[in-house]
Image (cartoon, rainbow, N blue to C red; front, side, top):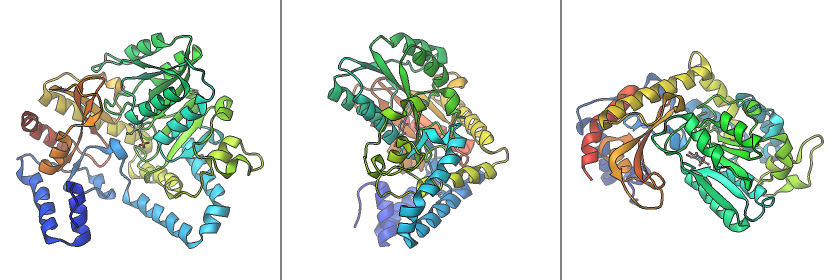
Length: 436
Ligand SMILES: Cc1ncc(COP(=O)(O)O)c(C=O)c1O
């Protein structure tokens, strides 16, 4: 069987031991050294991850990447689960989930009572929106920005259609002058009909760390609850969710905490918990635990799922904390420094000024690509993303973002990356951009 997409061809080559497919794999690997004269290598820490050594992987932000030792820990959980499914998933699950929850809660500065596990940020956003939909009235407004993640914008569109709500999209320019510009635009867009604001903690395509503390405080003061989409928050920026005081915050562990995939959290402030229910209603609504909230009982029992990613969260917190002297604060500092350095290298080759102040950078750096504008209305990956992988073994993200009408290059910085990898991207970029 030969599959169509290059990555699937590599996969089917490995599966089938097909000589023809193997030569495709070898050719594309060879491209890295022959296509340009500059060289790159990942950081010394890359050996703790499973990333393909020949690939300059500059897109941690899309799906994260999990260290080998933590994947092994997940396999141990899975072996235990499969050796005694009933003892594990039936009788033991609650205690295990509580342990992982309390470690995660400490990591994000929350009371464990206010945190529930979700498989990802998309699920967290949907649970909140679809719960609140029943409490909104036709004509109520929800604020978002034109940088809002497409999947979550879609969830809002569905909600608006079902309940007759108005979506008010607040434009955030890119380049942006600074956090105050975002706060001013958002706060002045709120009206007496505004019931909720959905705000990305870190925007996806443009990689901006938004000033959520200020936004939450000013909007909630005006009676507008805030749902923070923190898909990129945990592990990238320091979190103190109780101090933040947002009505709702959802985040992923599988992105910047590097946990196995499908581990996330939903924080709901105590005074809003009775409003929020999971999308999947299961036993928890009437099989109650003594002394536990309905919020915990409902979300902790989503039917039979693979809990091993969530249960591996304490392991990844400890593992990365010990991998780098200085632990998590140093990881965040290092990734940010690398993202800023990468941005400087790329801004130079693109001949542009950095599009936001350093204060709005975490571990992602995005730059508009001059001369690459377009007018389609659906968000899209630009074909250059795939071309760079095929021709140069570089994984970086080029997106066509409708609201901005521009192509945007985004790179990520994680412990396994090194500045030489962005320099190699910069070296091949002019030729690739002129080849349209
Ligand atoms: C801002 C934002 N929200 C939500 C998501 C969705 O994350 P997930 O697919 O893990 O739910 C992403 C993913 O990149 C994102 O960038």
